[in-house]
Length: 299
Image (cartoon, rainbow, N blue to C red):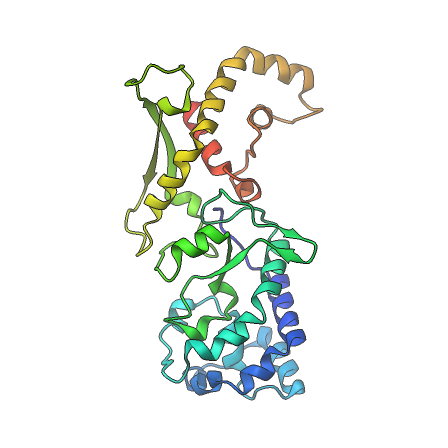
């Protein structure tokens, strides 16, 4: 849920895989070449020269600037405007199918994330030469086939999120913004209708406060709310640990182990609750966003 960053190293690896997979040979014979007129007005600068020269040397495609933008431009809203009438979903499916598994494996490794950026619930990890991740086309192939292979249009996500979102629009782009900034988990009290144990998760009421409810066709709030109803046990455990570790106990532990096992009280509290303190790390462990928000609320 924290913003994902495509570095130059990641871009270089992306291109390397394309050359290895001979994707450009297929592109040369596809209808990608029919949209080249869109790019004629722009000349690429020094950062693109090496890329273009490499393509020229391989005699892959004369319209190098066009290929570069289709693969690596982050200006997706601009690329969406292309007249793609000569390009169908079928044209790109084989290109993408031969590449997606390998890039899914690589992008998770290079980004150093372990959890789906959409839900922060499910692990997306590699094992042996396989991976559990799927690539969501932020702008779907059915509407924007020319963006099927753009690096910024391929979001590494879990199977559940990929199949729930499908072709629906979503206004928060994980490579441009942190989803974490758009909503907060809130523990808002107890449901006392049933005579249950004080810390029973069935008594707890969890809410999601969104800054903006208009997030596109995908009903993201409802999707998260339904799924996180299954994780109220985490709130119950937080409340129990708050009782077990009052401020006086925190002080004792900090005096005894501070500087050796942890460097701050926040880091100690993170250890107690098995969670990361820095919001930049919430992509590394499931439910980190939930725990972080509730702990901040209960301070």
